[in-house]
Image 1 (cartoon, one colour):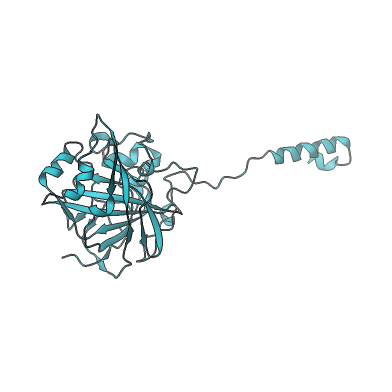
Image 2 (cartoon, rainbow, N blue to C red):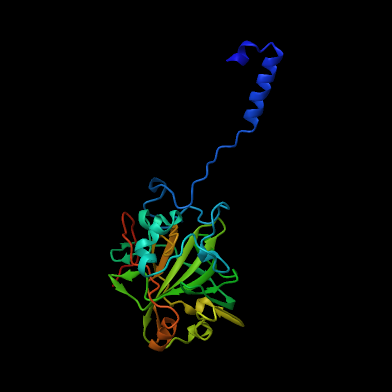
Length: 302
């Protein structure tokens, strides 16, 4: 107020200069939202049949890239596991970044029980050979892809980043686990994540998996790089009908708005093949999560 009254004086000029300087140094307002604190109202209840979730999971440079998309395993906000005080029931309390593990309404995996019949776009697979780069990261065994393979769904292209395994399966069908489950993780140019899940049952020996199983890393030999290649297309069932829903990553920080496509027809591995994997890691499956208001669409379950 004093500055207004003496604006004609030299002192008034000084006052005005100081005020202008203070305004020019004011920090800009921030519109960023802390990772993991997305309000429920901002999340869609379910995905339309051919509508891809619009949330950019990894496109914001201010947020850490999910560990599923790292070339190498990197430190987490908090250590987590599958048993004890760091097990799935405690993930949401281990770090503020993991809050969706307990507050999220679109969490994965789920039980595939009631399915809404629907005719959906076919998955157009464009997979090819990739050099073997198998990594044991403490939570699973994964094959790091060279990003030359991709899928297209309803005209949208997703590049294959990696595939990995869980034992037993994470998704269940009418309450029943399969022996294992393979997840093929894809990312589109706009950062949308799409995961194809393949259920694995115990049965006949499957030579298509030899290029993976012959070079499985271990806790002491954590990465296997070879001059040979793996073609993920050979690991898929012939029938590629699928169930579809909107969910999350199944490990912390349990990021939501992930497009899930679970192939209806499982593949088989022999008891010997399954046992070989379980000797490296077993019990790395998150329990099924509430479906809430979401719908699962796809062919009828028989």
